Structures are given as C-alpha cells and as structure tokens.
Amino acid sequence: MSFNVIDMFKDQITPSNIDAISGLLGENSSLVSKALAGAGPALLSGLVGGLSKPEGKRAFEQQLEAADDGLIGNFASVLGGGGSSSLISTGTKMLGSLFGANKLGFLASTLSKFSGLGEGASKALLGVATPMVMSMLKKKSKEDGVGVSGLISGLLGQKDAINKAVPAGLSFLDQPDPQPAARPAPAAPVRQQATAPESPSILKRLLPLLALLILGWLAYQFFLKPSPEPTRTAAGPAVTSAISELGPLLGRTVDALSSINSVESAQQALPQLQSIDQMLGQIVSSASGLSAAQSKMLVDTVSRLMPDLRNAASSAAAIPGVSNVIGSTVDSIMQKLGTIAG
Image (cartoon, rainbow, N blue to C red; front, side, top):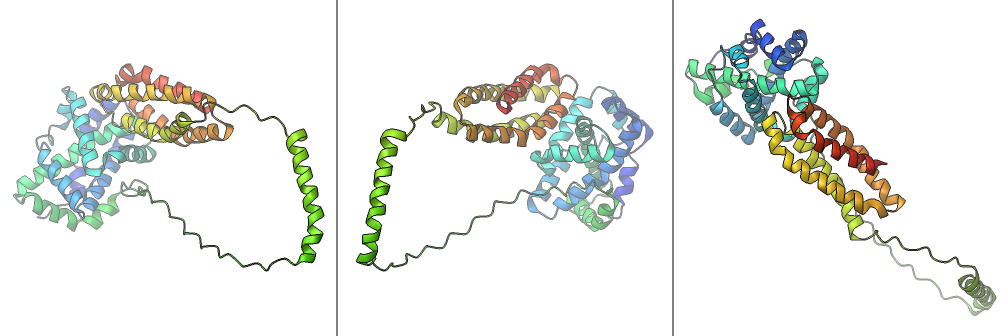
C-alpha cells in the first residue's frame, strides 16, 4: 500500500473546509488554518505512536470501523447543514477513545498555545479534525482494498515522516505520565547502647539538683501554669473528612467540565456538578472550626487545583449554549471555593 498520509491530509485543508470550520467556531480563518494544519500531523503522530501498544491498536481499529468514510468530500456541506454539533460530539468521543479521555484538556491546551485559538475553540476543532482524519484513512483503506492490517502497516512505515511533519511544540505525545511517589527508605533500627551504671559519688552530686527541679515543676503546676484554652469542637472526623475529600472532589469537577463538548453533554454533566456543589457546601460548613494549620491545608489544595478548574470551566463556557445549562452551578462552586480560599 503506497500513499503519503501527510499529503492526503493537506488535500483536506481546502478554502471551503477552512471557511466552514471558521464559521462554526467564530474564529479568524488564518488561525483556524494554522490550527488545522498542525492538528492533522499531530493527530496522525499520536495514532501511529499508539499502534505499538495492544490497547492503542485495538482503539484505532474500533474507531476506524465507526468512522464515516462519506465525510471526506462532503465535509463543508456536513458542517453547513446543521450537523456540526453532532460531528463535534462524535469527534470528541473518538478522540477520547484514541488518546484517553483524561488527556482532552491537555490536547486542547497544547493546540491553543500553538495556534492562538482559545482552548474552547481548540477543543471543538479537535472534535472536527479527528473524524476528518479517521474518515480519510477509512476511505483510503477501502479504495486500495487492503483492510485494517494493510492500513496499519502503511502508517507504521511512515512513522518517521509523520513525526517530522508535526510542528515544534505541538506533539500530543509529550504529556508526562504521573510518576508514583518514591517510597521513603525504612529507617535503620536504632541500637540501644548499654550505659555504664553511675557511680555513687555522681548520684550524690545530682540529688540536690533533682530536688530543685521537682520543686520547680510543682510550683509551675500549681501557681504558674496558664489555664487550658477551650478545645475546638469541630476538630474531629468532619474536619479530617473535609481535608481528605476536597482534592478528589475538585479533580472530579475538572473531569466533569472537561467532558462537556455540547449542550447535550452539559445536561448530562449537570447532576454531577450539582452534587459536587452540595458536597462543597458541607465542606465549607465543617471547615468553620479548623485550626490555622488545617485551614492552610484546604487553601493550598484549592490554590493548587484552581488553575485547572478555571481552564476547564472556561473551555466549557466557550461552547455555545453550555453556560445556560451549567452557569449558575459553576458560579456557586467557584463562590464556595473562594470562601474556602479566604
């Protein structure tokens, strides 16, 4: 099977396709052209890189089977005929299956930095470009009659050329996987050293000093020791729960917002966001009795995760109609986090 997949994708970057995508995103055509020209090779590089792993090859085969090979050649008419929302939703799910749903935010952020498009527009463009690439590949495999295995062989043979075509700074394979925290080495056992018994002469010299220490301690206990301050009643299981639950809860919030790519998906995510909002309210209530150190732990958690949360919320809000569905709930979540952060 002889073909140049990069040239095949370049053939799809036509003025009519660029105009259709620009109109859909409401973005400048020059930015859209740059983003699409970079996204194609980056997507192909990521696909070919995943083919070396069984799970990556299996995902590719499944999405190739699901792809619509009739999209190529009718791309602009599909976008202009009211099928844009469905195409973006399908493409985003396809992208998540191929690269991992937890990497969608990273992919959109990477493309945004490269092209100048906002993250919401970049996410939508990836939702359009992914089915374009898979449709193109499916059509080629059918035309040449080689099937999936022949197509994969042809792509692997062009791996180096595809990687070279990816613009600098746009690789979708550069996201570092989280490394497990290193286990501390077990402390060496402390060996008890035998001490020689004190001689009677030393004990005699220490007895007066010991008596003075005892008298001083008794005087402090009965006359000088300040009264104990009242115990904070909230520093119990509820406080421990508030501290341990906040980080995972904010992580679920980011995931829920990142999964939104249309009004329909926003409606599906709304119950989870409302539940998160209620749980944050409980955390705010239980956090009222925290000590200074415990409060700092909550503030640090919010400060660490807030940038990702804001980015995910901004990307979701950029999708037409989504703010009408989740806007009030997201505002309530942000208000509660502001209360925690002080």
